[in-house]
Length: 353
Ligand code: 5AD
Ligand code: FES
Image (cartoon, rainbow, N blue to C red):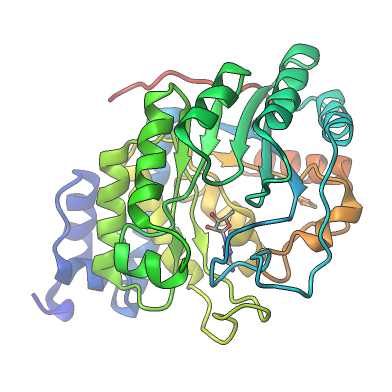
């Protein structure tokens, strides 16, 4: 089928019906020929979002507790191959103090994120989780990269509720091109293990990695449909000058919104965050995402002094903003859209699967 002959309204109706997407249509969806129809797709995703998961926007505070990382992802600014950033590692007490501060402001859902930092032993991570669970009544999500199945089981036993691990791309070739020290199948197996261990799992991909195309993105969508994670986080690839991909073009914001809208249509009751990366490449990127299917926002609650060192990509928003400022900011941006800010635990039962 030629792009010029494609009826966009008919195409969007087919997407709402979750029909299979051919390679030709996949190319069309991520090309300028689809630009005029994109607002219609976003509106369809917004309708499905409202009918399926309602108007609440779930707020989860992120603590970036260590920027040490043993991995060498070619796109990532905190890769072990970047000697130019200063490294920090928070102690148990510092993490707990940061969590208590977020708790005092009303946060009940916390994401503990770090590089793959083996200076923490399994017991250290478990101790942090146990302290937060016993002293503060908060849902705990881990975003700490790949560990072993036994280690995931230990974190789960210590009380962790959720685990975020992006597959980054469903293409083994692309994955292993940009992660020279990792195997795609191990990443995939980790996601299977996390599901089996009873975690609420979050995954996701990068949009605009060099070599990625429309059909590849649709294969990513199909992978995520089969995986059925509770949450899917996506964002544009943003070139970091101190990485091997520093000279590559950034992923397109509109392609992120298109993929997000497709996620809402094909995984209707998933938690879909309006990510910080989307807010970084477009000043109202998170608002646009919330109007194209998203229903989660994850403000940074880390100590401000650490934030400049956690530059996985450049120009990340909220570098100098204190926790209270970001809280008010996200509350008002959500309310301005006629939505309901929700600082709760954010556990909801699947409605339609
Ligand atoms: N641009 C955008 N996102 C990035 N990530 C890592 N590096 C970059 C970058 N340069 C994303 C990855 C990772 C998440 C924590 O951050 O998808 O899973
Ligand atoms: Fe940090 Fe808006 S979320 S200032």
